[in-house]
Image (cartoon, rainbow, N blue to C red):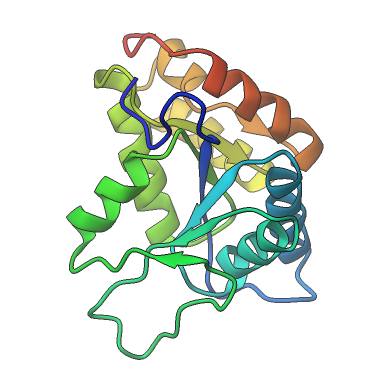
Length: 189
């Protein structure tokens, strides 16, 4: 399995989501709870490296002892990386950033915009064709509704849908993450 983790290493969960959502948005609290749960279980956490939901997940993970890897972009001079990251892997372009993201064991998509959708779609696409690709878990009712729309409007079969399970909340996501690192899905569904 081509992942960011070596045998004996902690698994890595990449968290993608909006940099715009801050407290008191419930999605911020959910991201913080996810980071906390991952940190408490000894996972490494990777985010885009900025604030919002990524910063919330990073803060929760870091406060629970996790290593937090941020993936900021060199060209985004107007943005400041989250202080909750313990390591920054600066990317010069999107292909470099996506290589880091795809090297995680699991990618969790939180609510977000077009950037989050694009990154989740790349991970989902890699799962269809690349053995050992990072697994994907979609978190929340927004993703469930989008996944239903994709199934209705795109050419997506049941096997493709199984590659992108939806967890309604953090309590539901943790078993999916543990299952994802314990199994290597058949990319053909």
